[in-house]
Picture (tube, rainbow, N blue to C red):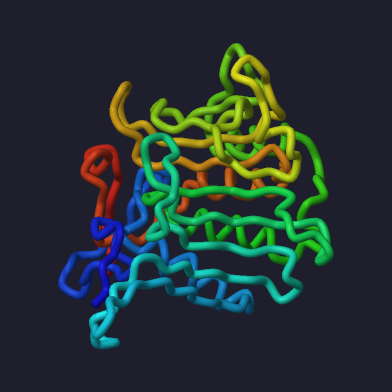
Amino acid sequence: MEAPLYPEFPLQPPNLSEAQAFWVGPRYLAGDDGRLHETVADAFTRLGWTNLTIVRGRQEPDEAPENRQVLRSTVLHISPDTLRWAQWVLADEPFLLGGLPIAWQISARTDTDSPLAAWSAYFTPDVPGEIVADFLVALDPRDQPAVPLGGPELVVDAVTAHGWLRDIDHPGTVAMDPMFTTCLSLGDVPPLIQDGDPHTLTLAADETGPAGWQAWAEPALGAPYLWAASFSAGVPHDLVAAFASSLSSTAPVLRHVLPESTKDRLLRAPAR
């Protein structure tokens, strides 16, 4: 018998067969349609990545096999060259980011001789799956996924090209959407974010480590975040720029389920 650790975040999507579909925008407030796992997993399939499922459970003595409790399961996707991989960790007691559990963790290493990730990126539920998929499309063809191409200006330029606003005090490293609900910032990296620089794990409370990109949607001032994303300091700026470009894109996305906290801010048109 399966006992999911996070039943409020099911691996299977809700039944959408009878729900009306809408084209909605802006996409950064559109949520994940209850399909963050499926949307991103489909991207891995199209890219030719291998997927594995690791199941860990518990079986009491004299208990029938069909009654074994599944305690944790990790869905792992690995690129053909094994330099990059991704984990669906929502059912694996993920740590919190902006008060939300991590759903996807994507990592890359410099070469196959190194067992450690050079960088990692993290995405919570309600990050639109299309945005994570676009990040993967940018990551997949890179021969050297840990080598930076370009500087932080790529990221801010990507969103300002779609009408986002530069922060007055930090115009080169902080930008936000025109409704001031969603922010992209280069700054301090939250605790437990894995990076290839081991110094980031041993920083004292008063030390500042390497800066990484952070993104989040806060529907109203002081309200709970809709979603959050974190990129460790080693994530190349051009890959974050691909995420930023998709995040700020004005192209609508198809949705059956709208987030309660943002549905009044969304423009929608019935999908026929």
